Image 1 (cartoon, one colour):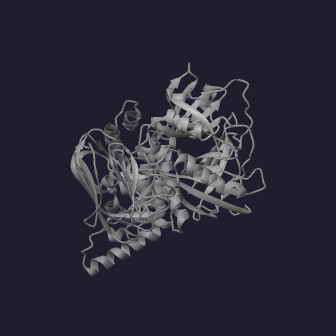
Image 2: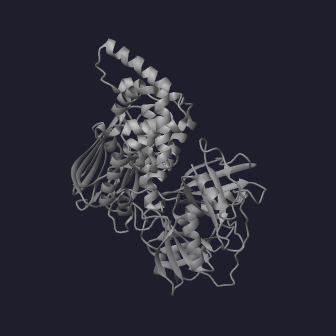
Image 3: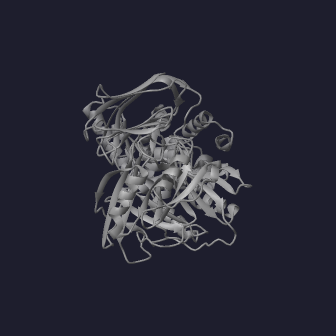
Length: 634
């Protein structure tokens, strides 16, 4: 039966609704088993519930890694044990059981009954705690969940005879009287006694974040950025989302369809970050984003057919107009950048439907801006060049240090209206192996940082009139028109693309949502990027020599975290390039990805930067054609 459920969830054509229904059957089937094993190891009812919930969420996220459906019980046991070990690493726990059973009984029992139960619980706790680990696991699994010998054997990956022997030994040590007490006190703790555990897991279909039920509140934490706890169902417009929540620092986030709303945004808490539900167009609303720290606020997000409005404690923060009547999707609540968001109440008023925009786990590698390195004594002139020629504005300037081992550093933020920033970076560093070392005067690389412009013919002519070094217009990846240009007096090559996406009237150029990467062997590169970066092929244009890959489909636009692979001549140089133009990818699991690259034989730099709690951690590596990838974690 379990193998059949796994097969149904793993079908390529299985829809999300079907997967959720099958997953819930797995929860029903294994909830007592997961809780029992965790409880036998932790001896704490609340921690055991946390471990069991996190184990099921891991199953939801990683089931595709299970190669043999018949092996699910043992695979699941290892996941539960990993969650237990994670909890025990966080705080020292005594491995005893039954310390919370009295609280699980009738809270209204009279004092004499409560005292008697306390005494019995104490006897059972001491007796079971003295059992060897294997016997203790078997006893709790058997009596808390009424599992058969075979079910316990499958989960523990031992013969049935071993289960019987361990249980026999435990019974002999406990005696008949204590066995009755064990059963009486364990049975009320089994999750299957009601629907509470199943409903919690159903609500915690987490995508890239950690979520824990704490009594009547839900705590959401995220070590990095971009994860959500989502509703299991899809909702359609019109709808109203009402959330009572608080954040301990930054980033209370809501998501629906293509939209994302961010209160207390990390880089600028006063600015409300708003992404349009239908178009995915991001914008910042000055003075409307701040909420108090560690105080409950009520957020209402109302989306009707022709407008959307955000209310905080009953006061309107922002209203937009658009065509929203056709939208449907899951609804998410999230945190970011190591903040903790606590949700006290969550309600959706609206009709459910069978499909819409899903909330999925964030990608392993996600395009996250760029830094353009310039010489220390040329920093100010470079900033002025980009302001004058690109239509960007000066947002911030200072000696912002990202590392502790350079002589000095400087970063200038150039703002692109309603989009984001590009960093101009200078660093005094002599070590060529350092992540912030930039080599000037070198050959142009095969990796291009691209910028969209609405009218590429006009932009091309404007640069020609300003005597900027440019190429002729040419057709490139995606069938779009491009031209290359060389910025600042250091001749830093950048690329213009004729595309209206993310362009703004206020500036001439806005960052593209993709990078162009030249490679000598398209097939080899596709395999490499799939293996090490988790990218997948979206479109192939083999005759033209282009392949489009992406880490996922964006909530914000058609293309996000995309790369265009371009065929280079077979004799093209593949020497590693440390060119000053540095697109960055954001990582959510820095050490895990670093180890993956090292173990795969990829050339990787040392990790630079400050500890993540203080700032950025960064490193870079090279693909088989010497293209440099820069990544950071914050």
